[in-house]
Length: 202
Image (cartoon, rainbow, N blue to C red; front, side, top):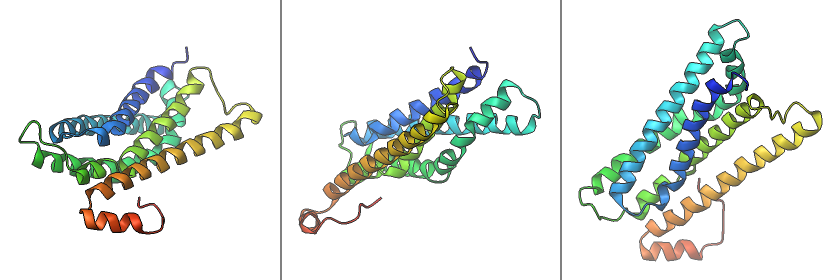
């Protein structure tokens, strides 16, 4: 077993867990459950950012060829989506948690569609899941499955990864639009539905 796995597996586990928690946020129909789940998500996101930054910083400070150096080189591709998480996702999760807290005084109060639409915004789940995929790309070579080593596989692997991220983004945008339309007043929602289909609001 490659010694990079000991460094990369905890990072991958945290990002995968964050992606799964974010995926389920819009499906929660109770404000208290949404507030609790966003609390878990905040903790996972901050942990993932801290672990990723620690590995990258340790790799930059070391000039050798240690396990941390190789792990940091693999995590370089995850730095961009992780930066989007730090810049956009953290703030949006805090807003959803604060909004859910305003409705969570009663245990069974439903979560408003507007709050669920905010939880379904693509800038919450998409950067988290893109970061998880990028970390998995770093884990695979350490596990002995290096798709980018063979010249014939590198191109298709990159294409599949780009298509997967695009499909995830479109799915989140459609779900966000559906919940946002439910949050509109009935008359306005009818008017919006009657308009010709335009660009997705993301």
